[in-house]
Image 1 (tube, one colour):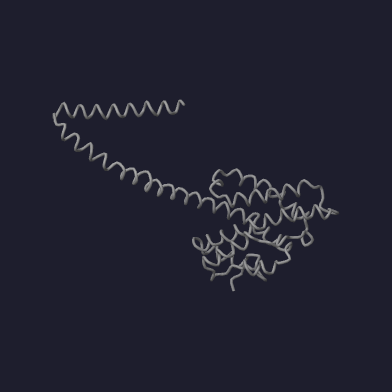
Image 2 (cartoon, one colour):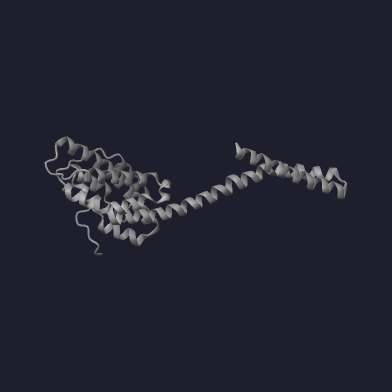
Length: 246
């Protein structure tokens, strides 16, 4: 209520100042006709001015600001994949029975176009194969995620993450998997029902992880071809990943 009162007072002050200036103009020139000509002209231009300033210019500035934020976020995403994401992509891949199909659909190469990246993101986002936990050392996975817990927490503290809902969802899914594994003293002799629950968490993580990885690699292809070249040579969806240029 106080905010509206302040707004009304300011509106009254500016209207009074405007009327005062027009009154002074009249006292000097004694020309009401001239005053109304310019007043109507200003009112006629007002909608166009509002459109240019409020809609066009504001949208351009907002878009520039958002692009700058996304540029910084892509640096954060790159740090995530360097520290955690790429290893998880490789480590969790063996949990899926359709890992060969996953490799085939996500095997990014130098010739990929935007259409190829878009199809890969759609495939990763709708991954239907439910993983199993027999092909992975869950204790090793737990130790790795617990080790990276501080790093994940620092990423979650970044206020710019609100601009990137998909990456935020990935961080929460990864953090939840880490908490689930950390809450158990050991993964040995774990009942099948609990393993099935962990498998559901792994599936959630991998869907977000693979989709975000593909989008991030497309960003590298468009903006940082030297980084993209390294990813193409070392990503886990190929038979013999190697950083060596041949």
